[in-house]
Each structure stands twice: as C-alpha cells, then as structure tokens.
Image (cartoon, rainbow, N blue to C red; front, top):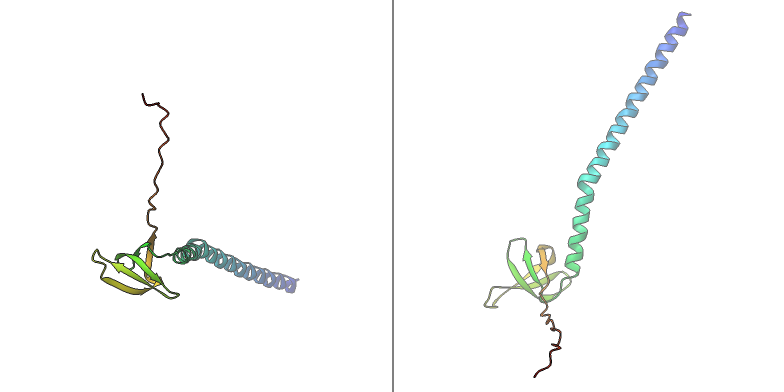
Length: 122
C-alpha cells in the first residue's frame, strides 16, 4: 500500500508541474496579445496611413517635412520630390518622400454662385 501512495504523490506532482507550465504559456500569450493590440497594430495603421498620404501627393500640395519646413511640391518622381520653400521661389530642394510628414491640399477657388434675385427691377 505504501508503493501506491508514493505513486499517487508523484502523479500529483507531475500534474501540478504540467498545470504551471500551461499557466506560463497562457501568460506569455496574453502578454504577446497585449503588445500586438497596444503597440504593433497602431504602428502598422499609422504606417499605412502615411503611405496613402504620400501616394496621393500631387504637384502644388503644401507639405511639412520632418525638419519642420513648410513648402510646395513642384515635381514628383518615384523616390523623391522637389519642394519649393520661401516666398522668393529660389529655394528648391529635392528630398525623399519619407521626409514628408504632413500634406495639405491647396484650397480650390470655389466660387459659390449666389441664387439669382427674384425681385423685379422697377
């Protein structure tokens, strides 16, 4: 009977070790899930948004660079853009597209037509 008791205690110890390793795996999975939802996913979303913004870049758009300079795009190639800075229009700098942080589309001069007056001239 004493052999049965020893066998029972070793089985319980093995089951307890198995349970604790399962708990460690669950904790690691939860930590990875938290990192994914709070760090990796938002970063990928912002990268995708920046890529869409750069893809929609057109000549005449006002841009802000990583250095804080604000200028107007005058030429676009596959890898780079030429941005014109300042009022004198003499400062034209080629730069990579990744240096652009913010793009602002120019305001189209939309002329709102006022409704015609229905009053008759007397």
